[in-house]
Image (cartoon, rainbow, N blue to C red; front, side, top):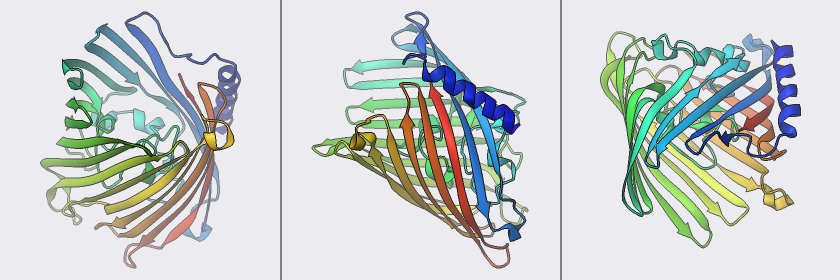
Length: 372
């Protein structure tokens, strides 16, 4: 598998390095093709007394997408997901959180117990333009809740930014992806309200549930730069989640804050705080995370960037006392499509004495990404 992944990554680099910018293109004035392909290899160094190996693994996800706009106000969109390998996410990593939060081989099969493979999203959107700064967009179909909730300019993309699950979204939130639902997006000047309703085939307990999410956002433009400030609610009214004893079913509700702010042309900062109810069996009750982004303009390459982030997650009711994650990466843009990222993570899981042994270690990795 590793040889296959390395061969694919090498071929991708050779082809896309010499490809012209804008490989993703408009086939016609109404139909366009795009997507992303990313190959990554991560190596973990942990205390082998835990029973885990010091070893490396890779994966290669591919997500092509297609957009058809019959009018300026209407769009039909579909995204597919394919992948070779599961990297360290296949159980090799002893940590609670995934070292790479990408949609890998097992993630794109039998999605939410629906028996659907590879089709991630397929939706129709209509936008009502009330005035120049007042629009309402309505979307329905197979959608991704994280396209509308828990956004962040510097910590929201596992293919070009942080890799660890703790720094991509708030793991104590539970906005689902790739299932039936609808979304509304109301943009009024600097304010934006987004709402999501989804029906999820199966959760981890094998139960169907309804998900509700709302995000209130405000964009602030000042002399130092643009900032985005968001308050997010995520919840389910259904008693579809097992309690810690596995004897009853409970609801789930979470509230998160996600802010990002630019400080001039070089430095950007972000924070994400959140908490959730403690009735259902959950790994983490609250999260406190944040970091900085340094633009490559600092060294004369504006498309490059450095990201440094830290997350502290307070355990809930399944035995985890707390988890700490620190991650740093440097991303080099080779052209308008292809980039290479060097990434290092430190992870620590601390358990209650009755739940298990503590573990910590390092994960280093390389990621090659092409956005087309």
